[in-house]
Length: 85
Image (cartoon, rainbow, N blue to C red; front, side, top):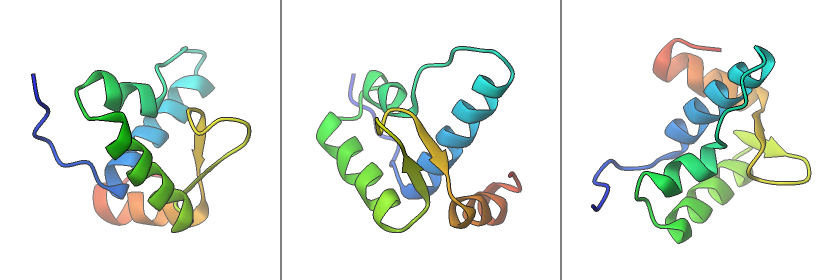
């Protein structure tokens, strides 16, 4: 089944926020990257959007992009768009 939901940087920030929040509460969540791929978004598109979010300083990561965290700029976007962070 093809996913028709548009993936953008704000959605990456939201998924990252939920991922980090879950980890802080002791839950072992699926990574935002894996969530988007498993929902039917082609991995190439996920890579482009995540790279763009990193380039725009919205998210960052240490060893793996599959374990991102929000930057200050990402938290501001999340607050403006969704009222979170």
